[in-house]
Length: 210
Image (cartoon, rainbow, N blue to C red):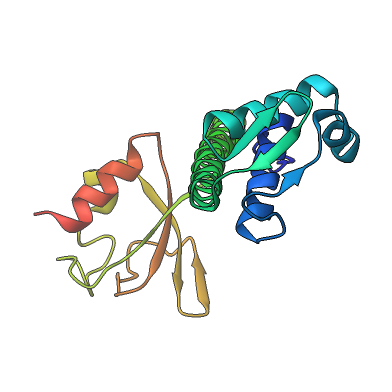
């Protein structure tokens, strides 16, 4: 699954207004200084005259500049330019965090859906495999607190109590196939047994409850 990083998109006029305000904060434009007319501003930022007009309108509404028809745009306030730049950056940061959170949630949902799909396929194939070959053994590790430690399979009547048949016992590096009724159950043995779908639960209850 390919994930593309989401970027915050701001209107061009807002970016231009923020850029002009940033230049005022950096003192590239000084209070009282006149800057470009709208037409020159549009050319400088490679935008339409309408976009340039909106950018100036934003700055004028915030009392950062004063625009006079025929006289261009004059810088009016350093402090308000600084406030605007700070607010612009904060809003941009919050929007970016919000979008990244939504993007992360989307990715997690896609991953969970994919995991669920894989799990369903695995269960389906396992069930089909067991229906074709019912002798695929279950397995269980023997823990030290079982009451049947060091007692033989025959002595504890394993088959009579569980309806399952032990077909192998792995002890360390040794594997005992068809161990018979005389092999004992020891801690950390892994027993392999066959039975129906309820056998696993019955064996577990038998080995660890009296």
